[in-house]
Amino acid sequence: MSDENNNQNSKLREPGMAFSSIGDLPALSHDSSPDSSKGLVLPDQMLPPNLFVLPSVSPIIFPTLMAPVMISEPRFVATIEESINRNRLLGIIVAKTENLKDSISPDDLYEYGVVVKILKRLKLQDGSVNLLVHSLKRFKRKKTLSEQPYIVVETEYLEDEVEKSTEMDALTRSVIQNVKRLSESNPFFTEEMRLAMINAPGPGTIADLVAFSLALPRDESQKFLEILPVKKRFEALMIHLRREQDVADVQKRISDEVNQNLNQMQREFFLRFGVDVMTAQAMKRAEAQALLDRVVNCA
Image 1 (cartoon, rainbow, N blue to C red):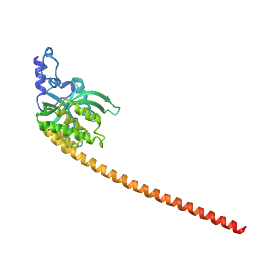
Image 2 (image 1 turned 180 degrees about the horizontal axis):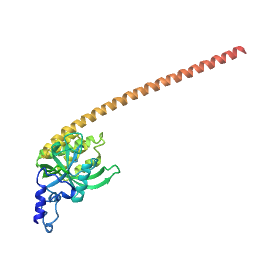
Image 3 (image 1 turned 135 degrees about the vertical axis):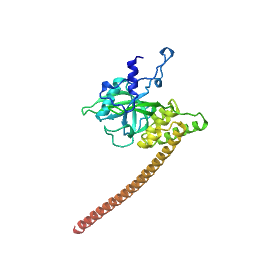
Image 4 (image 1 turned 60 degrees about the horizontal axis):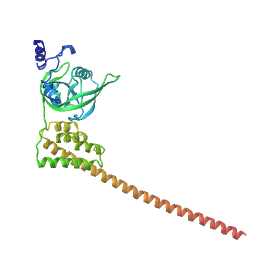
């Protein structure tokens, strides 16, 4: 590598350094890629050590999932453009506050996030941008390299901690069975999602898929992201699934009670209506008979 490139990379690794323009920002370096003659290059081996960061106020997009992302703040729209011009990779980290402003700093963000690949970009007339991203992997922010004009961080990519045990198999099956049961009453848990879980490459992916479908609140979603042992991830999921099942059971009971009351009201209504009809018919027959009697008497 030339001295010029070395100087550029060393500039990027100076924490807190600001860049006056896009042109001043040095290229983000990549991990050393393995020799292509040795086989296919795994995605993990192509992830760069440094990432542009996009703050988010929405729940996190767990690895292996695809989801839309909307950006309206000019500073972060520029971050998107810079990322697309380089490698289309971006770090998404959830903000600790609910208000996302251009002035947000790394101190306002959590330590853990996900690296995503930008698949599609749609520019809107108001200047905002809609993205379709594919979440790839968890990471932890090791150091902030830049705050202006873009947030750039040095990353540590994180692996799922999977243990092979009978208890792990039991937890996996229990989660799938709970999802199957919930799919009968919860539109988020479809049969397609259950099939996706069965075909998932590993238990960590199953856990992330279920957590994303549960639409957890932002804080709980962030806590789940930071759980690396998959067994603990499943244990946390079981709590959320039981809560969802309890809510579904209460909703079903309320619905059954409403339907029962409605059916009772309908039966009472039709009964009263039938009595009223029969009474009216009897009155008409009585009036007709009285009229007939008067006619006969007059004759």
